[in-house]
Image 1 (spheres, one colour):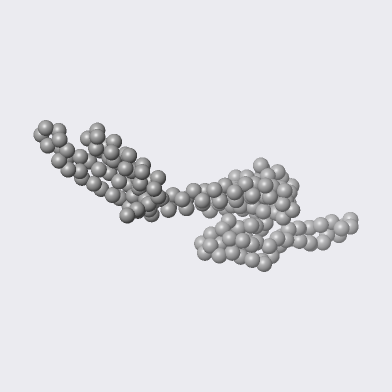
Image 2: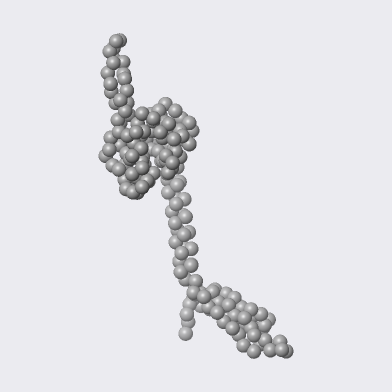
Length: 187
């Protein structure tokens, strides 16, 4: 009766024959089982019997295959993100659990008139101090619940001089927060 691919059976048989001729331990993997055999000797060095152990490693192999596929998919996603993210016409930013900017694209950085490099590592509260009281609860909610907040406008009023001696209050930043952890947000 065959329990696996003929090549696996042949390799296992060859390894077993080498071990028996050499009177040494035998180890191999066969059909997602790790096999080990140890000879038991008499006083004269003759092999009396063999002690075999077979360990099912199928779950481990399946996990390793899933892990390899996951790592490959992650690398593909990072490459895609690295390609699209920097020049996206939509402002995108990622923050960590302490609300520090860990990644921001040019579109979002330009809202504050600073470079991407100047934003990275900064606390959102420091970058958009006037908006922070409005958006801190939103950030906290997403980090706590893992649920996205969508279609929520956050406005910052600023004074604009339209004519000499006349000021008009107008929104200077209007963005929708959307997504999940981390939050795409105005900063």
